[in-house]
Every structure is written in structure tokens, then in C-alpha cells.
Length: 310
Image (cartoon, rainbow, N blue to C red; front, side, top):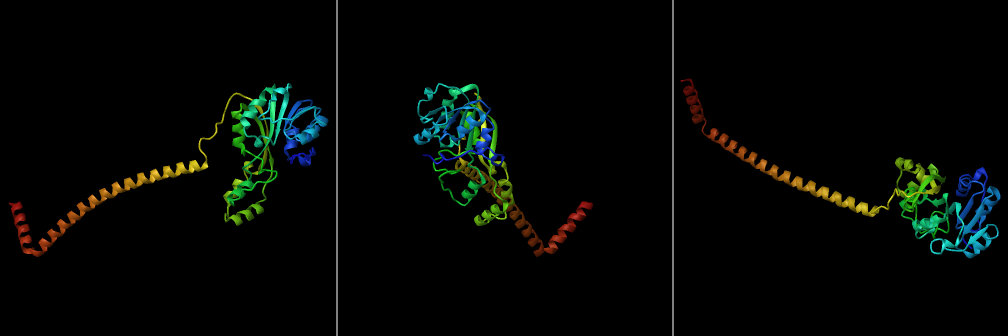
């Protein structure tokens, strides 16, 4: 049995800030739904009972699939990434990936291969945990990164996502995200201050503002995507450390240019200084000469003055 086989669904308004609640209300009544990673079929059971939907499931864990078979129309025990999904002859209004995409080795390839099972106006629905949540950011600031049994750092997660990466993966797979909501889990300001104090980053008003942004309080992304051939985002060529290295190299080159220019300026200044020193030396010698022969200098000056009058 999986860690998620006992999950239950609560459709009350008090549970509105949950991925199942949000996805449930995105599915129209009487829809044909394929629940990828349906586990024990709890969510599909609610769709059947409350939305009058027809629900099939895909589940890789045989024990969970056996439970799901009791309530869903069809349950296919297969690996959605590797096994032949051509055995599924139905087409669906909705294909739901509930906290599944982060477990996939090749999410883009999987989204492409599932597309033939969508009706022409069909929709992919998904929920994906947000790696940029403030709790993870704080842990990384502390230098911590510890996997858990479930949640954001589930030890079985293969890929990690923030909003930009969610958009990129769907776009690269040939889909356009038409709606993106999120499950919100804030950090109280006092708790945030306490954590920042421990790290040594307080006072940190700018960090408070950063933590207040939607992408920091988003715990899970919940959204829908439609097939679209336009690809908007490409995988970044360089990672953060590469960007730092590029910044370092560019900064180093800038400093080298500045040093070269300063050396040139210094050389020019030295030449100017030599000229000034030479002129000063000549002036000093002339003053010394005049001081040693004051009468000769005065007579010469008078002689030149008389001569000029004549």
C-alpha cells in the first residue's frame, strides 16, 4: 500500500484551501475522468457519487489498485511512463494528475504520450507541490535539506517545481496552462522573525516582503492545461552556479580593464609629474641664480628698461 491510500476527501468549505477541493470544483458534472495515480480511488469515488462522473484510474501499486477497483469503472495497473497506454481505448474530458508529475522521470514525455486519451476539448488537471514555498527557502538558508515521507520534500519526488518550471514543463509538452491557483500556507510573521533570528538574518524587512509574495506562500499549484502547439518556455541553459561563475568572470574582466586603464592613467600622470618637476627644478635654479647675483640682475633689468625707452 502507498502512503496516500488512506487519504480522504472533505468537500466542506472549511477545506476549500486544499488541492482536492479545488480540483473537484473544476470538474463538470457527468465528465469522463481518468485519474492518473488514483491510489485507492478515494477521489474518484467522490466524483462518481457527487458529480455523476465516469471515472477510470491508472495505478502502479497493485494493492492500491485492488481497492480502487471496488469503486471506479476501470483501473489499469500500469506505469504511465513506461507501459503501453494504448490498451486504454477511452477518451476523456479530464485527465487528472494529482501530485503525480513530481514523481515522474520524464514528465514532458508522459504529458505528450497521454494526450491521445484526451477528447478534442479535453483538459489536463494537476496539483504539484511548490519547491519555492517559504518553509523550503528557510531550510535552505539554514543549509538544511531533508527528505520526508510525504509533503513538499517527499523522498519519492524526482523533480522539483516552482511556478515558472510548472509552466515550462507543460509548454514544452505542448499544453497551455489556462488556470493556475494554489493551496496557500503562510508563515506567521513572528515565526518568520524567530527563524531569521536563528539564521542571523534579522532585522530583515526586505525578506518579510519576499516571504509575503504569492509564490512564497503557495504550497501546491492547482491548475488546468489545454493542448496547445505553441511552446513558450525553454529549459534554462545555465544554472545558478553557472550564472555566478559568469558574473564572476565578467566582474573579473571589468576589473582587469579598469586596472589596465588606471595603469595607463598612472603612466601619463608620471610623465606629467616629471615635466612639472623639471620645470620646478629650472625655476629653482633661476631663483638661486638671481639670489646669488642680485646687482647684476638689477643692472640688466635697468639696462633693458632704458633701451626700451630709446
